[in-house]
Image (cartoon, rainbow, N blue to C red; front, side, top):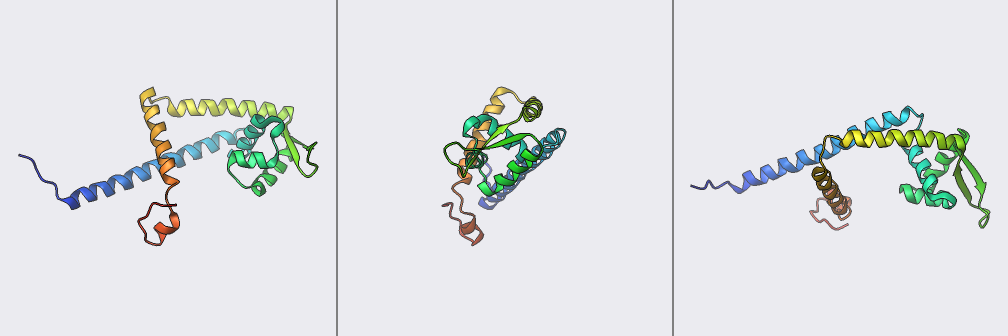
Length: 170
């Protein structure tokens, strides 16, 4: 005999699953962020500074503040102070752009390179240690699910949801 589950019971289960899943993602992200931040503190770097150094490294001669900001998905105003602090620490060198006198090109100094290389090796170890307990199939599943979540989140309209609308249009 098949037991009929009342609709409200299924709705309550779905609501509990949604809430538990959301909190699981948030808790995992916060714990990862906290531990990653602590790991980078051993190199006297913030996550933003490390990310900026990596962006400068990968952009090469194209490492102008706008390109760095675009790479890090922040505003140029946020990058300016960050770059200046890296320069003050001797990790980054700034020079005038040859084609645009108003712009600067950032490059990593030898001491900045040494620090970045050490921090990058530690960041690689951190990621491997964090994901070590999971097999390839699980990692592929999580990657796909998080990509799908990211895509879906981009369709949400926070203002409409705050106003009481159930629309998912951004």
